[in-house]
Amino acid sequence: MRVITAAANLLLSLALCTASAGVALAFKPAPPRDVIRYSDSKTKAQLVIRNKDWRPTSVEVVIGKKRYRWPKPPSLPVTARISSRAKRVVLLGGYGDGCSDLGNIEIYNLRGKKIAVHDLRKKIAGLQKTSQAYTRICCPCRWLHKIELSANGKRMRINVCNKHLVRIDLLSGRLKVIK
Image 1 (cartoon, rainbow, N blue to C red):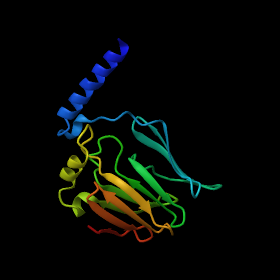
Image 2 (cartoon, rainbow, N blue to C red):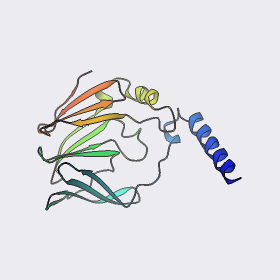
Image 3 (cartoon, one colour):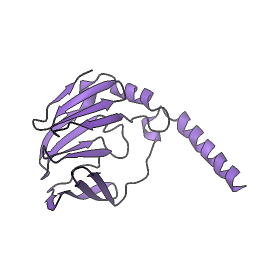
């Protein structure tokens, strides 16, 4: 009986989610954990974000035995990448309503100084429609397909919605849409 009820609830929530997929505010993710960690196992680098009520209270980058505390915490990202060779942290998107931060890319040095900010909505025409076609169920503004860091850690390639390719030079902060 419980299995049938659980399956019925799942189907009902999936139907509601699919019916409201065109509405950007229909998707509300679970609240973030109090401590969010993004880590790179190859370089033993870690980004630790502590937050309360969807607002970051402190950010710390740990590489080996060195710790860097940021003076001002940024908004919560969807994901982050750390390049210890380039001494950069890249924050991608925004946690929560992904449509408000769709295509947002922020590059920081290890101490929390902002190097560059890019809004892909200005560089890729129709990004919101492309992301809605890319993700049909529940979250209409998912845009990250694949993120790759170069071997030397100084460049990043981002596959956006499996349709566009973006290259970022992490040292200068320059961004180029390849296709």
